[in-house]
Every structure is written in C-alpha cells, then in structure tokens.
Length: 94
Image 1 (cartoon, rainbow, N blue to C red):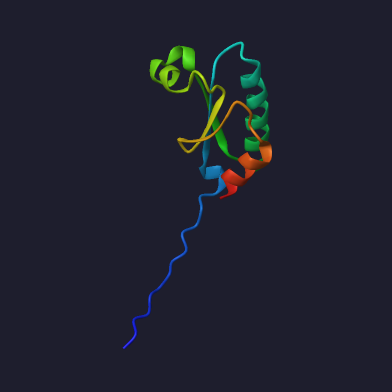
Image 2 (cartoon, rainbow, N blue to C red):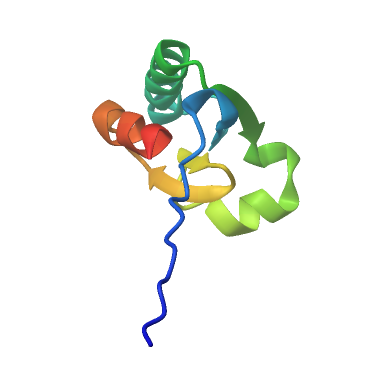
C-alpha cells in the first residue's frame, strides 16, 4: 500500500504585504542613494517601507554602524552599503 502525500504550495507574500526597512544616519551619502532605490522600488511594487536612524537607537548602532546603509526585508538583512534595485525587486517578489 502506498501513501500519497499531498504537497501544498506555500505562496510568497505579495510585495504589498512586505516591509522594507532602511537603516542609516543623517549626512550619509550612501544612505541617501539607498533611500532613492528603496523609495523607487517600493513605490513600483506597492511595498511599504520605513527608515530607522542608528544615531537614535543604541541597539541598531551596535549592530549595524559599520554596514550602513542596511536594508532589511521583513526584518531580515537583505543588503548593506549599496542597494541593487533588481535584487530588491526579486526579494520583494519572492
């Protein structure tokens, strides 16, 4: 007797259900460039985004100060220093 296993596809969340977090600090030119990419890609795909300032959060400062800007997708680190728009699009669609 064979057992049939049902496979259920787990669908990825829609971009509109995703949140991108940009972690940076004021006066950072790389942060400004990253913000432009995040704003553009999120607007294109309908994803939400937020910005966090490491100078106002001790934990973020300890964790990321050498990597800013840092981009998180749904709380998981996605990129740092430079944000590739196509890579961010793929992450939001997957």
